[in-house]
Length: 54
Image (cartoon, rainbow, N blue to C red; front, side, top):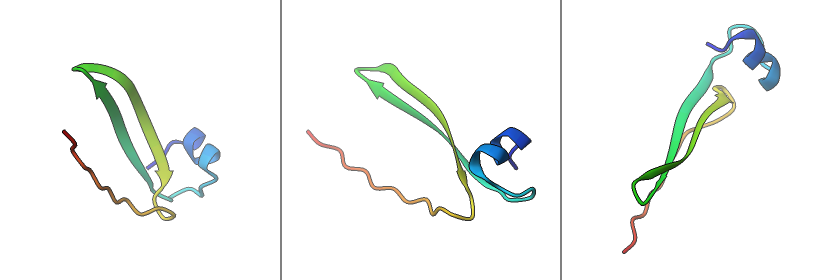
């Protein structure tokens, strides 16, 4: 459950859940990006597709 600050930024009511993800992007074995992402849990659906090229 989100804290009060996160609820305020996302416009949530108390008791509304969030979807929280950690994303890391790597290039040539080095971390180039790290983010914590928070989304209103009742307004989003998580899906993903990945392709690995040569």
